[in-house]
Image 1 (cartoon, rainbow, N blue to C red):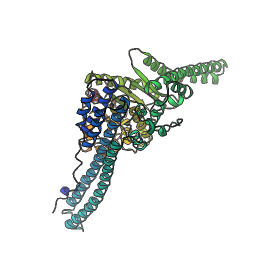
Image 2 (image 1 turned 90 degrees about the vertical axis):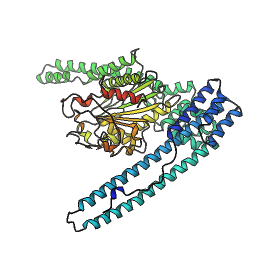
Image 3 (image 1 turned 120 degrees about the vertical axis):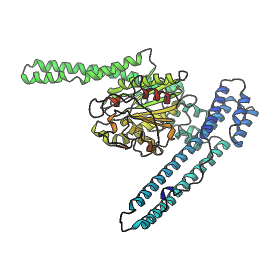
Image 4 (image 1 turned 45 degrees about the vertical axis):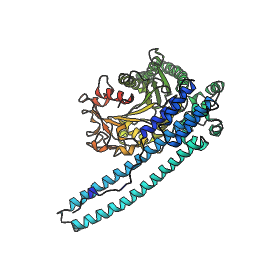
Length: 559
């Protein structure tokens, strides 16, 4: 009997390319550009040094630009900025191909294992098919699947080769509208950078915004205006701009602080009107009126909400804090997004996606977790600038809803757009961006990473996860080494309520070895606690915990 589990798929060799070296080369081009714009000495030698890192074609472009003493620093900056973006796009294209290749390999490995298990089960079973017949059927099935997977691989390879030709053409011919639009869609050029490209850009700038544009187009629109035009836009469209991805953090913060002040006044007026109504009702004297007044006075919802808003304002105004209010909506479950540190200038940016029962009223608690992550990142790398964002940007489920995927699917556009916006508004060298999903937030992260919109992140971290709508890390379109997962021993997330063992409510438990991610250790956590998940489920961000220290290292780019 043959061993079907060793039957080869037969994919051709992977592309011989080092994405890390490509990205390093792009970083060097950015460094030369910064030095040029600063009129620093030694520019010519830096051109020559960077040129040696690339292909003959790219080296020729860089060296010739330097030797001919380009007509202006601006022209040189344009060439360097464009070259760095094209190289990064090529690196992304390679990573996309490798992610698709990994998916094909995973499907093949799973099919082989299932086929071998079916043959082994037929041995001595007395099945009417017999061992030989079962083996033949499974072999035929595998051969059919192999043909399908090889055909899929051929399509992915052809796409990669088309991108390779396009990258070569882009570097040879220089920026055009089509190539710039692709770089915008990949969030590889900010609006301020796009301003370098002159005649290729105007057709890409909308006359006015609808709010549905890609964040890079929003940022291009913003940076294409003069300061006077920007101020006019702020005055005329504060409600649109204050939560719009692609608008700089300092602008959104200014607008949302004004909105917060207005909300505090509105809540104070509603409470005053309620109290007046209670007094009027009680003054009527009847038993029914008094009962209604007592019932109304017992409802402290508005008071608690006002307390949260005032606490948020105090936190924002504290001179010891460097906070940015990026969104606030108090209607229903609402929205609230706060950054600790400016994400547009930070070296490392993390987005914390919370889980079940989170609403805008949870923002101060979430900011507290963000502060803990910030301190952990600073401990990991005290010389870098960090920003941690507490992102309540979707309608989180209640406890019964958390067993279903609906709220996670609905959050995809919001989280994808927010991450794209961070890229679009960032200044200088691209930041190292991490997305952290806690509890159902990890399910949101998983759905977004697998979506057509995608999730722009260098690292993913999930803690206390009920699953990511994935069976293997390759489904998430991120290298296995950049996907980190942990669940505390006493966290009941996958111990009876959401599922058990490797089968979580939303796919395979990402901490399982079979998932393929980097599993990291958490403290065991406090035993017991309220139904259904217990205390340990909320302790990953506690000070001096193993999980917090590890997440800080990931944020700081030390893992």
